[in-house]
Image (cartoon, rainbow, N blue to C red; front, top):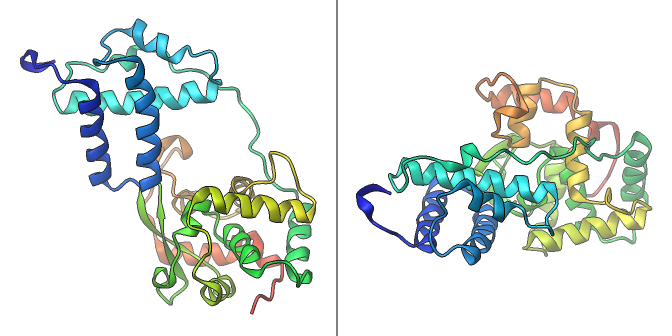
Length: 276
């Protein structure tokens, strides 16, 4: 550490979280960072400076490989920040092997299940309409449940785009006119927290007959990604991805092209739902 100044780990964590907040990361992302780094701080009072200490932390037997890989990425981000600010001379996480996670097929809905969902939303007039519209906006846009719940009347620009608050701040993406009209008719949402919205979607899917791990808002997002047949770069931007692993070549996000591509390729256009 530069100038032999010893700063407690909890102070370094606060500096990191403050910087990430200023950078524009979503409140929920900052919250997740904080909870995970608090667990790190519970084990270490001072910043670990050996590979063995990091590996000991990551070896928690209660964790899945997914958890270990998530913590590894966060710690790499944290130590990169510390190195850039001069708090450490090198990032020891670069010497810690990245935990391998099993290659699994992303869960998604079949064509028949998609049809079942739209048939239910169209024909079951007794079920809560706002819940159905929340599911519709997920299917129409591919956004995360937290992003859907960030939508307010002022989120729409009147030209077929909606601004949502995502993991790395605000972004603009296309939305079909029918879906926009329905959302605006039934705003504001009754649910504020991501967990509450997830429960709403899970209950609605269960009512349709879709249960288990696949009955989730994230499965809708996976389905949108799988079914999208347009420009893959446009898809990357619509999904709000930032990792270069998502696509080999990045190009600037053209929102006019995104709107045309979205209207042509969103799978929801093949189904009917007269909400208003």
